[in-house]
Length: 401
Image (cartoon, rainbow, N blue to C red; front, top):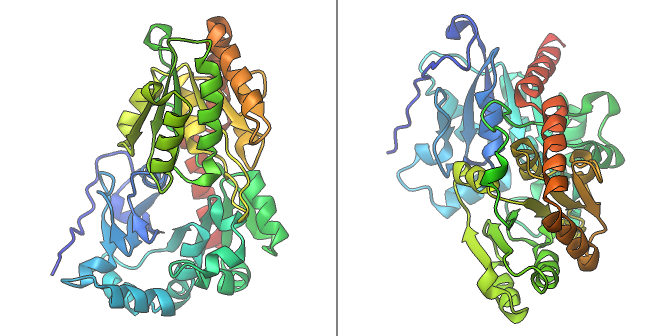
């Protein structure tokens, strides 16, 4: 049987005053510590007045220093499909109660913070059993994907069936962009308990790069799925490459479209100038950003309703001093000031995308000016210390009620 570590190592960042006096918050995500979701752990790492631990079905990495994690896979020598399936189908809270019973006298959490609406539905019964508030953060597809598409997924089908119950009985709903908030309100979530809350990026760790670090490199960081619009980027890049001999396109991320996108790059004649690096650790992504002339995220609206919620990678690039180009869809316009910190282009418009990419390649002065303006915007609106302090105020408000 797997035996997780339950010690909470206090390394000074998470605590003000004795750590035992801090209220505990369970960060709930079915699949913990995915390489594509560093923002969840990063937000928890910046909590100062609450002590986080992570709760979920399965780990895909390690928790942040100073925290611990509990997962259903710890309960069994073999975390088999029938066991997973039963819990997914029924939402049975008993396995999670067994996990929480292993906290060795540390006490139950003061509240549960679920990331993604699917997790909110799954955590609702547990929160009600423990008689603690439930906070749910919505990030994108959980507010935009059509119910029909969710009903076909064993992992998601309970969500559209129980979403109205979550809206009635959940204590607080936080949205990673104002776009997501409006989508939730349109589906019946209560105005008074549904708020925009940007997660933010660490402006102390991510520092502006120097101009000499820059290369003629276009960067795209995304899971390789339709909503990210990578195929339109490849077509736009093929146009740019005809007149810019030295420019390269670097794609970081993995997903079901990786092989078709490889094939598309080859068919466009730019296969030797496009690098597909797959999913990389967060530190390596940030390192690649420091070399980029620009970061491009040409998101689209899909037939299933998916749209980009915001794009944390856009904020990280801006914090690094890199100009960004994105589509005018979803929450992307909330972090790009068109013409000042980067450019917004119509979705699926590869000609407009190519034109803006070429403009930035040909004008280093403008690139650097936009990068500096993007850094200032992130410091003003998206700094993670300020945003996490606001999150703790939200925690305080639900506990006070």
